[in-house]
Image (cartoon, rainbow over all chains, first blue to last red; front, side, top):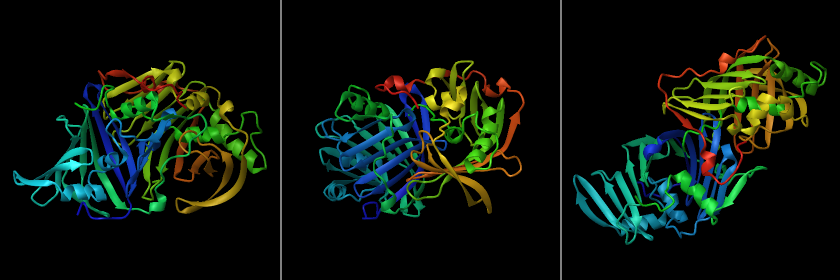
Length: 231
Length: 236
């Protein structure tokens, strides 16, 4: 069911972020997703503080509060390309053809009372744990030929939403950060209402992704260390 | 995403962006003069207190979201927004104390920064509202259905709502009982914001204690300086 093709969707949820000893934070988020693209808006109270979108390998991100953002093409040179980031952003959605192919070709074995699927996912390797009913329990994605976990995801129990059953919460773990999303709404969307990119206002500074400042901004937002993404 | 709450002060910034200069006539017959008079009462007051209800639309077509809070505005001194939502923020900018404070109960942490770190538009609103008051707008009378009743208000063009809603179309209306601003709505090409200022009280004298946060004991304080981590950029 998670891999079934579907139309555009939108969602609402609460996000909490823990970054090691740096404490925790939280925000509200809304998103719209259509095929290989996703747009996300973050709020603190009713104030819109962050816009981010991914269209293929094209990333746009701005922190409105500071009028600072980054835009550019994910080159994959740091091991992150657009489709991986897209999948990692909504990891309940296995419908992308390249993800479906990876699932179909994965090695399957029994694991506890459920199943474990393992195999290549583009330039990465994945391990997906499923419940006896086929619901995802956890997913880890790491680079080929590297043993350390790059990003890990845990899935909460399923809940029925307007757009179908998906996990009620998702937890991402990477580079010492833990991000939890509690899904409040997941509904079909009008693809025309999903906008990618945002009008850049006068005075905003939009850095290029291929310059050091742009990469620093992305790393800071994702809670990644300067040295790399591995734990 | 360290607790750098972009302020919930959009309503005040919105008003400031719309407001007329303080030396304009307090009353008049044109829509523009009527709007000026409505806003000048608030901006010239030593202090105003208000409950606010803020409804933000969903840019992806879902239902909107409503937030309730209290607002204290002391022109020349500072302002404070206290969210009444569970776990909501308390935000203070206080020029006399040189402080920009955000308390987030969910984290149990008080974030502190210097006055200069507060958003520039907020600082201007507090210190020199007349400099924020963009006179370059046109007001036209327009009735709208709001809260189950038709309200006489004003549609304003070429107004800016600050950092939250660029290129917005703004409509505002006074409370018929008081003549003070009551409803403000701002819509951009992607989303919209509706603010209701309920029970605005104008005080004859400012009470700086209204800018004081009521914090639990032993709340840790941390710096609010995420911009230090970013390559430049003044907050706006």
